[in-house]
Amino acid sequence: MKQRRITIKDVAHEAGVSVATASEALNGKGRVAPATRQNVIDTAARLGYSANRLAKNLNAGRTGSLVLAVSPLSTQSPSPGIQPEWDVEYYFRVLSGASAHAFKRGFLLSMLPSSESSRNFLSAADGLIVVDPSQDDPLVSAAAAIGIACATIGRNWDDLSWVDNDFSAGTMTALSHLSEIQPAHPALFLSETSSSYVRDELAAYLDWCSEAGLDPVILRSPGPRVDEAEPVITAALADPDRRFDAVVTTLDTLAHATERSAQALGLDVPGDLQILSLADSRYLDYGLQRPITALDLDPVRLGEIAVELLLDTLDGTAERRRELVPTTLTVRNSTRTPE
View 1 (cartoon, rainbow, N blue to C red):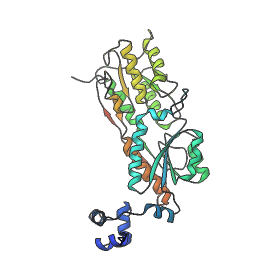
View 2 (spheres, helix red, strand yellow):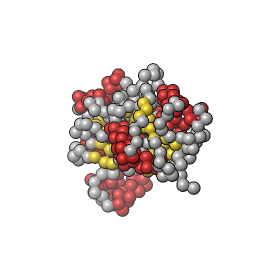
View 3 (tube, rainbow, N blue to C red):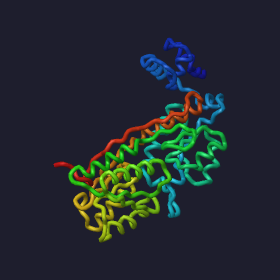
View 4 (cartoon, one colour):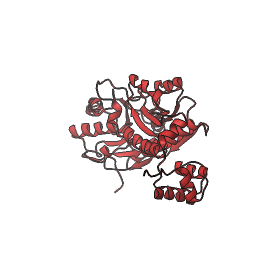
């Protein structure tokens, strides 16, 4: 004889709460007391309750699918082949946080390539998270055109919820660290200026140089990949008239390229050149001769919050929100520190 499927009503009855309270507790919604929520969760686990997510989404007119994509303008690269976002660990960590949190909320989240043809798949999703949006972003425009919910990681220029880091404060902290032992003249190494985070970092860098009485030195890579950045930074470091003794990069890949070039040219890091990345990754801590000091942007948390913002938009339960996640500086061997 086939065993009867455990329902939400069974869980509610066993836990001694209403069906509505049981549903809110299991879905992480509503104002349910922590002890009550845990009781419902434990009861559901003991009874072997598994929510029928497909039926729930179909009843709500949803597919249960969310997508995350990196703005195509923030990852533009002249090199054919590999999508640049696959080479940046930050995006994978954002995806990890977002997909795990979406799953807890009953949704499956996948990463959409930034190519134009991939936008045809947006209509199959309930909502879209755009990472590092630009002004007049094509992905944001595509979501608006087909009428799906959208939130962004990074400030947007539209009436959408977003979560971001305080890049202005983080950049100032990083630049101040470089001059803790003796005054430094840092260059800023970037690959694009369309994203809000790069604009914030650039503005903070220019302000810092102005306050320090230094001429800004801005280096630009044609793309975000290590192989694209290395020729640019090698030429700059080898220039006999070089005016900088430190390099601050907007991406971990640019910091990686800088460390490789410095080693190839026989420069001592941090004696001859300090290197600091405004985005951390495990590649900066392992596999390099000098682990690189970097800002931790907490990308997993950014992904989690972005999912919450998107689902609030999807449910129509909240007005537009703006969330800031603080950064922390992880000091390693590529910068000078007090002995």
